[in-house]
Length: 441
Image 1 (cartoon, rainbow, N blue to C red):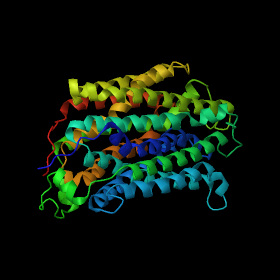
Image 2: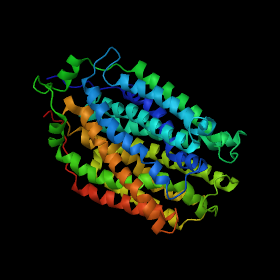
Image 3: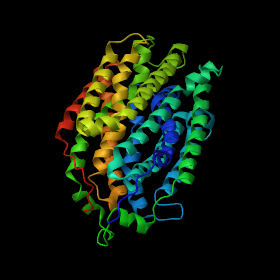
Image 4: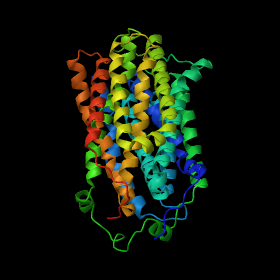
């Protein structure tokens, strides 16, 4: 039996580099979509329903892409054709979303924006899922903590760039206060620049990474002829490893919390720190708050990037579970503390816990899971695992409007709910069963 070759740091870096651009786009979506949709006319009680487009897209698309990429072998490779195609589509969507008001002759701007949001997220999913599987394909168990931590590092750097872009462009003199019904120029240009960065970074990975041939892949992962036989999707669901089911509980509470944070932070901070009122989306104060949310999201991404550098050492020394659990609990305290803060600068303190949790969420579940998955079905199971990301977001989307209504329209209180959910995620880590040897059946 052959074993996977040990890769250099730069080989691992190159195969994940495209995730830098994907995350620039994804962070722009996370930090500024609520701002865009509010400007186009969405109200606070309906905002979470628009966000349902993203998790529904992931729930449907990622298993299909995972199964398809498991069966795909081309001159470009196994995963890279999907990464490449998704990046082109995402770049186009990132141009159209903030410019929705200019296409009112086709559809009302809010509906056009919602459609572009859906299209953009589908494209991100087409690109992201094969990146996760690519690390599992090419990185040995010995280097798996490093492989997913490098990916986490690049994700966090991309998030920093995406989150800060509108603020930087405002500093450079681009208008941050839009005409009524239109998106600020700083946000429009940020999405255009982010789309270009996404495409270029994916091209880097496509041309700097050589995937293994079908024969090499089978040898390195000890895949028998029996494993190559087609298995029905329902049989795959029946054979899901116990580790994956238990990770799903942690993922539910983690991503429920993150969804609430992305949807309600801009409005919550605007109301709690700048004292704006509901529907006040064209004022200078609201748009200043929107930029500041980009700054604090960028700050937690910086912290996440720094923590990603040391996660492999901590995980190797103390174990993946203790590091994962502690990180999520700190994230819960960080989110909950935002309810009590009325100073824009003190929000940075809250982001320390969020950044540590984000770094762990991006790396630890995949490092734990990939060791428990059969190599021949890595893509499809990673795609199915994405349901543990999307289902909690769907739940949060349906419940968000009801919860914020019960809380009297106080968006900042939703961050307290998010903090509680993240804390529960940390406690649930106790029940995960780890496997340290990669299995093939």
